[in-house]
Amino acid sequence: MTPAEQPAPPADPRPSPVLLVFLIVPLLGLGIALLMILGEPTRPAGPALPPEMQAQSALLLNYAAPDFELPLLTGGTVRLADYRGQILFLNFWQTTCEPCVRELPALAEFAAEYAGQEAAVLAINFEETAPLVQAFFDQNALPALPVALDATAIVRRSYGVVAIPRTFVVDGEGIIRHMKIGEITREELEGYVQQVRQAAGG
Image 1 (tube, helix red, strand yellow):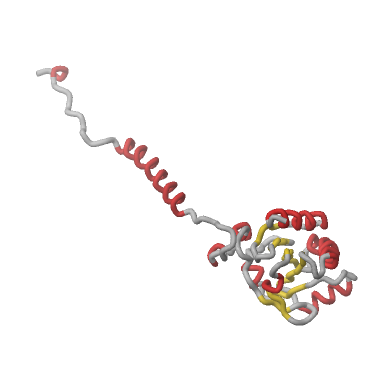
Image 2 (tube, rainbow, N blue to C red):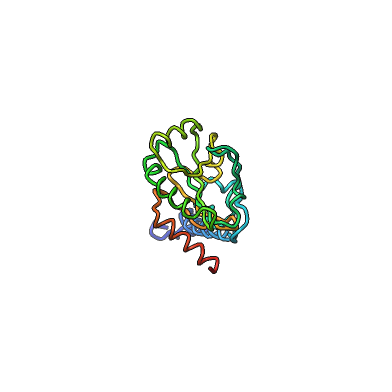
């Protein structure tokens, strides 16, 4: 029998490795996507944010603001719960941050106008000492403003603050409703008050 007359070898019944790869990869991707969808937590407004998620400020929106107790620059202590029933602007800043310093007069003016009313401001200075902060206010003739001292930055970390200035808008129920990264203006402060009012049905 000549080579031309020899029968062809039987086809290999095993699937091609390349074909297997093209079949398995999409299936794996589909499985991972399904797991992500099923595992995605719901985010109802109100409950406290799990500790493992507190490192990211954006994830704090519509969750209960992390509680704290800090000394005030003027003496005594302050807690988040002290502002229950008010719209609180929680501002994180340092004396070496230029946009932080620029916004202090607007925050002070706003705080003075709304004193004892529906809105309040608490400026949280972190990783700086009381004498340094007081000297800074005195030397720059800045208006009085409620300042809390987060010397160990524990509160800053619980709010996931990295870039400053950063301001959280906390409603009367203690829920974070808005967050502003960067210098905040008087107009923006008023605008946030209106937004919180409208969301509350007022």
